[in-house]
Length: 73
Length: 145
Image (cartoon, rainbow over all chains, first blue to last red):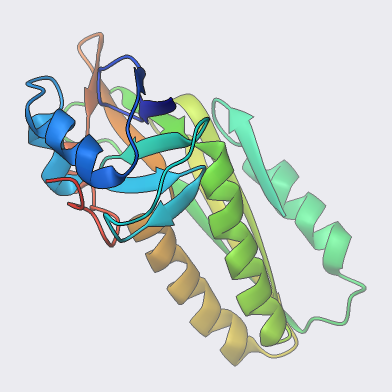
């Protein structure tokens, strides 16, 4: 089981999912009306490290974060 | 050194504190950047969400980059609401000579705007509205689309 959390302005509660990689997560979130419009502009982190490949493996207890566009300062 | 503060930053206090921390460290240049909330588009102020774990690792990379050039970076940012003419962001570079500090403050602030996991909202008419049009997608975004 992994936890998926949505940061900043994405108004969605965290999910607990039984998935093995980010491809499976992409398939789930693309069908989710609350979050699908955000996907094009979101970066992804696993356990607080940004990732750039869907092939990144997931293990039990991992925490995935979706980071929408930023604007500090 | 990275510090986060609830509400506006105490600019004179932070600038003085950083000066006192480093003025005997043999840096010839201290170049601060102070961000102040401006009145525009009828806003009452700004509000910020910060994701600290990734902000910490982003800042650590910049500390190492600065150190490799003999310099030091410091940064303070607000969480929550900051009203007009108050400050939400201060960055500063200390370096032996001015050129490195001038270049680093530019590079650091630009990367901060593009990469630091902080989300800005306009405070307007009692609402907190995500500043989507002024926000930048982090490099690598769209992986799950």
